[in-house]
Image (cartoon, rainbow over all chains, first blue to last red; front, side, top):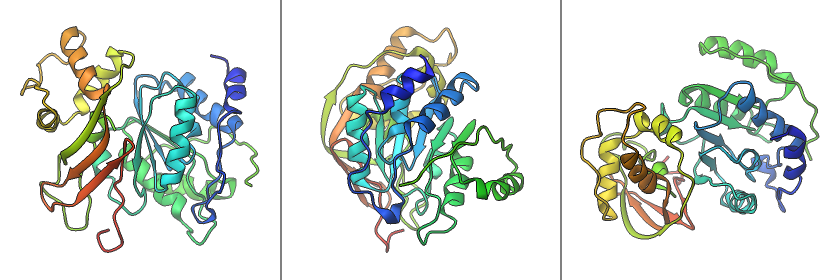
Length: 182
Length: 124
């Protein structure tokens, strides 16, 4: 699999027709999605034959990236988003499991020690929901047995590094990428 | 929803903290869909499974599994067993139905293959 081909194919992923602003719905760009998953796979071997969960999957682009992920749970609070994700996955002929749930208010205890890797592009907390990114992150860290790959705003980097020390986990900045949020 | 996912779901309504797993299946519409056999994934998944819950749930859809998980969970694990496991965990899809909490009786619907675990404000 070549990164460039991967990114090209992803251009066909459908985004949101009517994004819900409150939920900060925008589709992760193919560029970002491809690099994120490709790195987790080729550098850290955190994808193949692993149990992977996508927190706040939205239109499901992260899931469509790698065909060989065997079983992924894609979780989102919005059923409309899950329907788009489902269509995208069937378009790309990838299998995924979808669960309609609220990452921040529900107890995620049941997933603890069951999921190896969590991938996510969480809401950044810019729509009267300040701090939601950190709740996503904390929940993900408590659940994943191996790694969490998460996208964040550069301005929150220092805060996240500080928090991860508090939480007793290693935190590494893998890449800095530009992205326009429409 | 596959049974692998069902095996990871539990009731999470407020104050429902014990005996809230596994959620009991009812009125299910099931379809079997062939998928690639990946023994490495299954071996990785095996220690994470709640075996008793899986046995109980499988029975609800008329599949009998050994009540005790075979001892050898490493490379020498019987291929035949892994194939059975593959069929039940990954090829059995629940399209419609309901899941009831054994403790508080909260019902979580499954629609178009997607379990709805959202709680309303008073339950969360």
